Length: 268
Figure 1 (tube, rainbow, N blue to C red):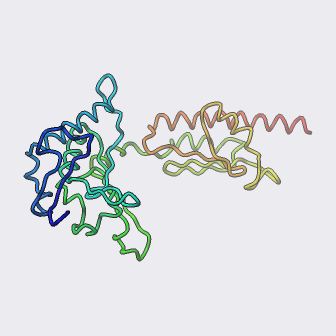
Figure 2 (figure 1 turned 135 degrees about the horizontal axis):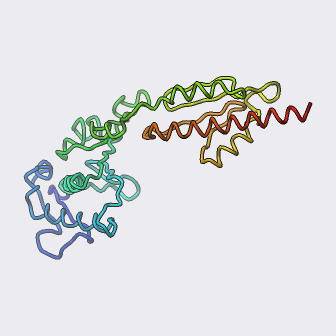
């Protein structure tokens, strides 16, 4: 607002040279947020500009190279450059165009959420819902550090699938290997304690170094904690891949045990 008048000014890049677009005046702030503006000429200009930008970020087949849209609804930059408020109509059109093209929309409401801007969520001011939203700060009023990330059902369901519990039969076979002391498999975690004594056991032990080197040749990067090695699969890893990993681990541990036995014979 300047001189008691609310104004929306277009950046140079977006100006069309046509009168009536470069700077618009409004009688009140609420008028700027009205959904009736969605049918205006300015809304069409915004949509055209956004479409051009999205197409410039697409490959030769027209497929978008954008992973997601993340914006701070209701405001933009704070800091040494001042505060630049974004036209809510532009943000609303941007969200609409991205959703139409199946681009996930993320709202950063760490600052704007919980009535900072007079509404429980700044998304209410835009009349649109994101796929993912992040909240913090006023959620506890600064009493304790706490944040939350919310996701739509569609986003949540995209990460659900078959159980990530490791193949029980294969885990049992690994536990029977002479070179293995015990195994713990839970969820996405599989930890294996190698049978070791004396200086070969414990957190600082390098006992598993040769085994780890061989596993890396198979593309498996297990983390060592002394004579304990463990790996974790991703939340989207298929059961078939999990089993394939375990089979390779089984073979390498079996090979590792035989090498240790041969070394013990030569030492004797």
